[in-house]
Length: 288
Image 1 (cartoon, rainbow, N blue to C red):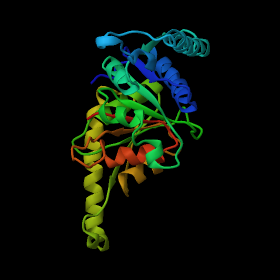
Image 2 (tube, one colour; image 1 turned 90 degrees about the vertical axis):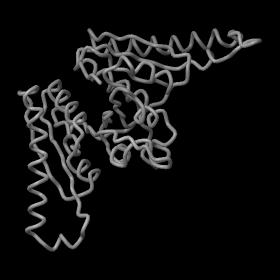
Image 3 (cartoon, one colour; image 1 turned 135 degrees about the vertical axis):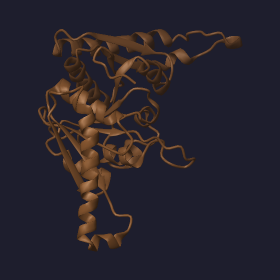
Image 4 (cartoon, rainbow, N blue to C red; image 1 turned 120 degrees about the vertical axis):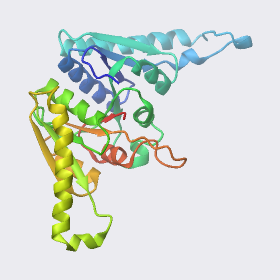
């Protein structure tokens, strides 16, 4: 996986307000990276087939194609106007949105999609394009809420740091360096044995061990990113609660995907699933 600035920022666009918010954020991100912005939308009219499997275009296809092309061109023109000098390209996809975006994601440094309102987990994520991309994209996926709280542009990049997972931390350092902001590395811990809570010495020992491990992981990233200021935070809480608490005044949250392999489990881990639902900020989910 590469997050090099030379790779494009890919955004999936439809006519929803959420997708428009995602495109606005993606354009700003591409400008920060000095990367191309690739705006992609799907055209369902390309799926029709004629006799004996031969492809054909029904009468309605031409106006649909023209409308989709004009929709993309208008979006690209708007982004060029708002971000002078930004390299903007478009892709009209003939396949379904998930399949098309997954194909384009192979050459992208970041994929950006919108997220609907926060009324329920099912409405926000389950069965959506966003969920499928978060679960399977080869590139990091940024999920941008339709309605966000004011983003602190100079706020830190908050990253959840789990054991034996380095990719989210590496992404967070690179992103913070691009933005010229600090990294806030967060580690959460809970007690498997509730009786330990009454033993303050044992609790202090656990906190010290978590802090040492976090600092070791952070120090490994300092060499390739020496100019990035880093703060660490160890909290007795669930990982999602610690990340949401730390995100006040932040510019971005970064988490690992922690993909599940069980038959009935979520297609990605509990922590990114809950952070995506709870956060008012854009959240980047990094494959690991």
